[in-house]
Length: 558
Image 1 (tube, rainbow, N blue to C red):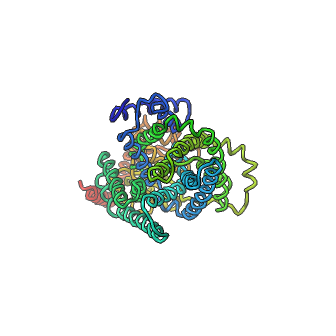
Image 2: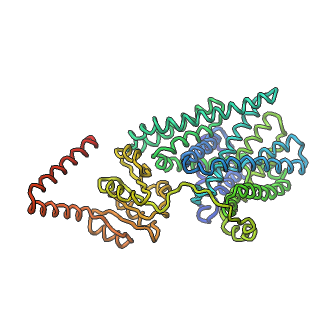
């Protein structure tokens, strides 16, 4: 049996093979990873056991996932749906707990065990939902934001429950005191993260932003700093990672960090789901199989109805209510953690962990396909959704850019164009020159630091909703990406250094191509004409030009 580094090599190798197979057959990778764990674990060939190395990588999966979620949340964007999200989460958790409690009693478990079953099933899977929403480019939609918000409230609830389960209390007052302590600690750490990211760490990232490796490692160091602080305060590492990411999300460098952190997160999350499969034994799969199948069907239906009716009560449209509800039908990996702790603390017998594990496999697997085919389900359930249509129901707007101008690169010409276009449009500037960071951060433009060729940057720019895309970057690849991804009614202005390249851009559909040589030639022609007509005015123009060059040279430190 493989152990240590050998086991990790086997896990990553199998994850790669089944991941490729899942992609080729258009199946969810999450299900492929769980199956991989079952195949190489006790249920299958039993060639790998879940040792400390795999457990560490698995835990890092959740940590990095929460860090990545934090990096994606702009506080200004979600302010309109914040209180709705908290209300939905609290009501949903309470009602789902009652369903789980009732199922436990119905299936013959004692009252205490049924309480823990209700607690375990009231959470949805942060790892699975965020992973699939990201793969489907739905994380930034209103239903996606609602789901992620609810998941984060659930994560805070998990932290509270874990803290309460590991401490002995003699009175209700002590319980209340512990709750106040947890909320206070989360608030303090969150405030420190937001303030220090904006006023301290942003200047650090500005200094090293030109060094890609240093940029990445400093971002990770920042995450682990807050992970350590949270751990020392007896908060979960996941909460620390989320708060670190949330702070960094409020500064211009967050998209570039997302691009660099995501591949690492994907590797760790693959190990997380495989480790989940490794933790299942054959006895667990057969001992409660009929009960687990029955409970899974009830839970998926009940969770959908609870989420849908709760979101509907907050006056969101049936479309948003439906899409957000379909995503949340599974039980969470945290349910497994809570059950394991309950067994360790002696609250319930070990047999219940097999039942919860089966519920997790069945609901996660089914929910993955429901999320993938929600458009088909939407059409099937259209008569049901029409019943909930009402003029008073209206989706809250998330402050996402629309009908805006995207400017890639920021030079003197871009400055003039941005000033002009900002009179009529919202302007988003994407630039990876550290010397422009301070000027752009203090401007009225939306600003995103990073390389336009990175997918996270383009996704954040909301290119499909842009009215204009103007590229001042010298790279041919950036212009080609813009022209290939553009919407038909978006005006694209590209930049070229040669006539051959300009012809290619026009063939790809550019509305206009800025030719450096042509602009320079026209400028020289204008100067010569001015010299022949008015030499004194020509000399004044040259003096102004020299002063401008000196000024720019001083700003760049040359």
